Amino acid sequence: MELDVINIVLESFFTFWRACRNTAYTFFVCKGGRNSAKSTTIAQWIITYIMDKPVTALVIRKVGNTLEESCYEQLKEATVQLGVETQFTFTRKPLKITFKKTGNSIIFRGADDPAKLKSIKVSKFPIAIAWFEELSDFKLEEDVQTIVDSVLRENLPDKLRYRIFFSYNPPKRKQHWVNKKFETQFIPDNYYIHHSTYLDNPFLSEQTIQDINNTKATNKRKYDWIYLGKPIGGGIVPFDNLTFRAIKEDEFKTFDNVREGIDWGYAVDPFAYAMWHFDKTRNIIYAMHEVYGVKMSNREAYGKIRNITCSTITADSAEPKSIAEMKELGLRIRGAKKGQGSVEYGEKWLDDLTEIVIDPKRTPNIAREFENIDYEVDRDGNLKARLEDKDNHSIDLTRYAFEKDMKRQGFRFV
Image (tube, rainbow, N blue to C red; front, side):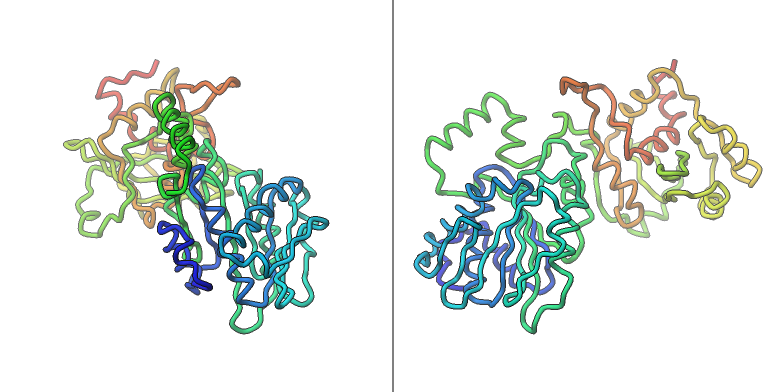
């Protein structure tokens, strides 16, 4: 670590500092609960780095007028914590923190209009560091990507490399793009993820700890979300019986109790097919195969399915023409016998299974949809008894595939 910061940085963030030295990572995600010191730690790292390398650091928040009382003060405090405040100059119009010895600096920008940051450039010291504070304030991932692309557009001089930092408290709703991107089985290799909570911060006041404990005692859901940094969704976790793990080939070869389903799609909605194995003795289902794609014609889908299918497929009955076409092409296929309450019954049946086993490498779209889904809420934020009707194609086809099993176990669609 640059400077003598071993006694300054919290022990729980030592792995973060080591990751910042690892050339395998470009993106660093610090998420977690309130009072976890993630922003403090990023600020400390940025100060030490610009003292060591001739680069500019760019600090971004969605709303520009929030920068002065948050990130600017956080970085200024970091210089005090590190004992180097006299080596910097601090200006407020515009917001800027400059290292006196070399003249490189930390600059601040709001992303009220992300397109305005496309042309940002510093002539002498390249922008090699970008920190997006309160990432979840950005409504669209595309707005963040626009700024990232602007920062990463040029090659850096030798021995310099880009580092992009994201810090945030996870939003409550699991469908928020930030949660879908980072609360997942699918993290790119060049991303480092660090999750922290107030429990990692030994410097909190007794009053703060007391307030946190009061929240824990009176509102556990709020405590889990705000202080543990969990995206709690509607408060009830859909499919808490999910297991994401590798399904090895020897195990896969034993799967012989097959169920298959299709959910139709063509334009913006994807066509989705899946094959499952049902271990009825242990009440466990295993995802085996999937075919998934947007603007996929029935003939294209047939070409992908015909070498996989080995039983009768149960498909969404809303498209009888598609079912008829697939029959003509040679598939064994039938329409699901949907009715009032069938969606809720099917979701409850899946939720009541002992386990739903998904290998993210074999069936990535099934994995993504099952881990991201959340319950619907009404206008007042009250939980409904059914899942959100979006990004749920694999879940729908799974209901169709096990329709007969549900009926045998006492579920009736009326």
